[in-house]
Image (cartoon, rainbow, N blue to C red; front, side):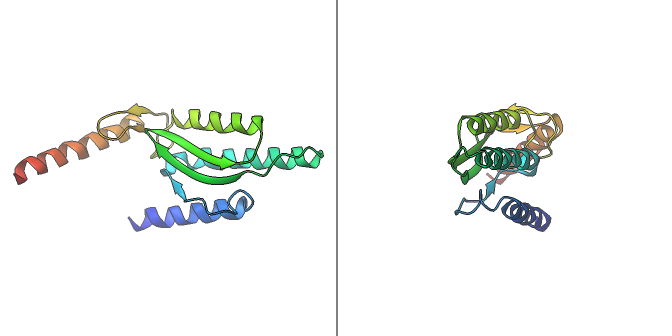
Length: 143
């Protein structure tokens, strides 16, 4: 469990240092698993590149500031202020990409039901089903 928190802290610090303008406001952290971190890294890089390029051409596009990033109903949610239509398209694309990517490992995945809706690859779905089955057995033997 410690490694998971250390990985999260390192990822959050890396993102805040690499994209200080985007994470300048309190934003609530990254409430999704490691499998989606590359998607978020690419999204933020593309957003900031677009902003820098547009604003260098004297077109004023408001700086994107992240409000919240989370998983909800098996999908990525990226809430932000600022930007333009191109950035809205980038965010929709990243959210769609995450909807087909395992939240845990980043391999191809699909939305799975059974309790919480999660986007998982076959291997992580099998692990999840084993945990759910064990929990059900433990619950039934306790009563």
